[in-house]
View (spheres, rainbow, N blue to C red):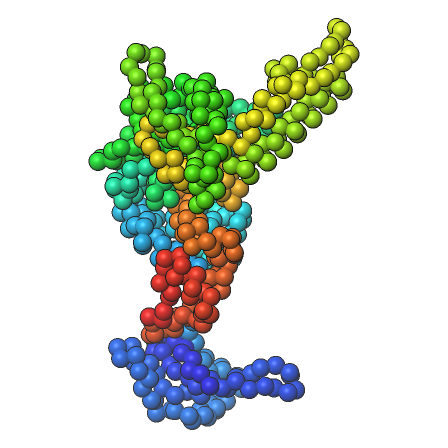
Length: 529
């Protein structure tokens, strides 16, 4: 037996009924009987008995005109029953990281819509906004109403550059004491040709859609992104980072350390010129790196250099960098060897040699591979025809010698273990960009208006902050070995909430595993209010 509350829209009175379920054997379905027990006192929340408690009302006499008497209208009220476990989790994260507070400050009219769309993007992989109505109807979320595709477009268009920068600035204040930042570039394609900074796609990638580049500043210690910037096709890495920091208007941020990669020594020269701290992944083929590697090659793979917590041999060389000027700069070259990486490198080298050989023997030579043909093979040929191909074993042996080795160069991290640990955290940044393209369906941006696109990217960026936090916590607690992010959200999502007029929110049943997930992810499990 349970109590059901129904509100009479005419009088505004909420009545309480005892509801008893029973089984109808003839119709083979569950039925219920309701008995009026009183009305709800809105101030005290108690049920006050009425004079008609438990009595059946007599039927009104038929009218003299022969018309049938109208049936009595039974007052009722809709009680809210929603899925709440996952959105409660996201609410808690937003409050913990200050996202909700900062959105309220910068977007006072639309903050709840931004959050609801971000929640939807996180919980519903690759579903378009047109599916929001179904999701929103069964979930408790900040906005609490439907957001149609038209509403979404209006929301995206309302997000201005000033409001976005306001949010970046407030988020940046929370990172002020964090002194390590990662920086990377993501490329996304667009169906629209109306975007100012879009450029033609690369036919070599079978993608002729216009493209956009996005640059992101990401806190390595916190594991969270805090600002981004759209880029044109050609951009200098160092100046882009400086523009990003200037755009975010972060007063007081100092000791910026960039964690990125470089394919040429010119990048390092530019970073020194701008007086920036850096940690860069480089090829061991870099002349100055290879020079140091050869000098200490026999000293790296010895027992005392093995770091069991990282699974690699590590060796540090403190040396000097000579730039274009005569001033010498201190630089650390961290050299590493991994047996697992050696196996992978050898596998890749073997596959490359087999591909090059097949191209030569079939006559299907690729212009981009000409340098590699000459490096690894002796080729005897007549005009237009290859006569004989033989591998240059000495060159192959030399390449194999460096399998398993990799390097980091830095002007800040003097310890090889610390440097590698920080650099490996960059994998989380790569994961974020992967999710930006795949999970949020941004490999193809559908949007014609410039302002709409900017708004959509911003809302997806908000979702990325949440996703980055969840991913980071899962890695810390080693939950990533047991669950994916989607599996965690699905396990929490089934927790229900019940809202009755005049009563506080009630949370449905939770099992111990769900409570444990909340705790490990840094959130207190929900309780009935």
